[in-house]
Length: 133
Image (cartoon, rainbow, N blue to C red; front, side, top):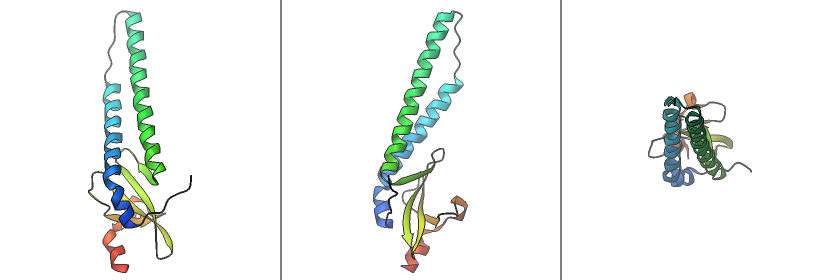
């Protein structure tokens, strides 16, 4: 799969869908974390083993759903940088250079951009791009 380049308008257009998927990723992570903190022990070894199996199945189901959503985002060209906080980037071009349009859940739209090697701490206002266009 090749990376996809987005115009600002194209990236903004899919933000509602991306936001929904990121929300689901965050929910899944929350459910798994909560599930992993619950420890139910039975005095009966058989019941304990059966409960452990059911918990493992549930955890794997969540993991499968999590990675399906990640894959779906990537197929759309969205670069998931940190699913724990809902941080994604969209490849774009500006002034002959590759850049990232940066989105963090639950923002309503893309507000920032940064160079490929700058990362989250190097985010700049999207308004700077608009001024130079």
